[in-house]
Length: 259
Image (cartoon, rainbow, N blue to C red; front, side, top):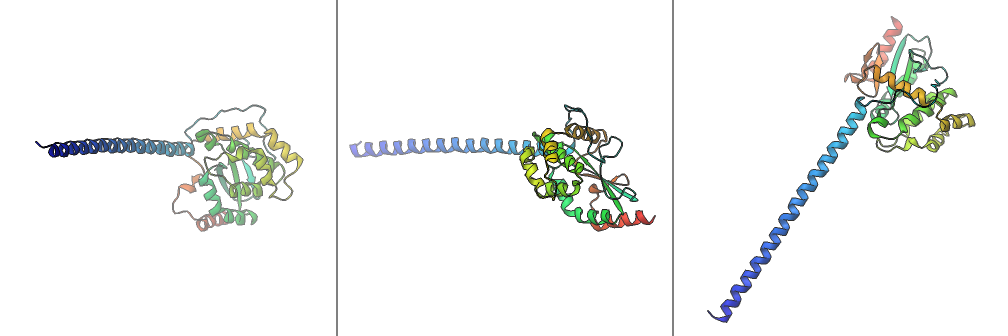
């Protein structure tokens, strides 16, 4: 065999070896990508499961919090956990369980708030708000509780409805525990005329109603409700009724007032 032929075969073998190494490297990268993608999918699923758990009410919360239970001014109900809005003598009552970190609660408010305001101002409807901490328990943090305490402080000042609306209008992303920042809650109070006072600031910073918020959440759990928002009219959770609309709710309230 000539020297030229031997050199040609050697070069061919080298090229094949290089190609095999390239294929091995490519296969290794492919497997790494598959494993990496699987991990991402698993982590994504875990995140979804966490969100579902947070909104399902499955996690327990502490039944007590440090300090005495101090209900906000005018709180009503069996456990003293309801903040009433509207005329006390209204013939129709809507019971709303909400979490200020809950995106579904914000969606409910965006759709129904104008109708609820119209009906309460007309004296046809009374809304009883109950504040809970599902997202804190499911995703961690304390923003649900801190915001609920601040809302209770606003109730003490006679500014609950306006501040309640401001909190939902400025709701952070569900996993963002921004509402745990008391300074932010106080800054948001500046959007409500007359709310940002030394008394309100002290109430927020001292967590005056934290134990009351814990009591409210405990009442939610004992009620066996499935998630937030839970919106009860005549004992029925109308938020689960896919045919429900603000117009339909308005008609139901008007019929209750005529009856």
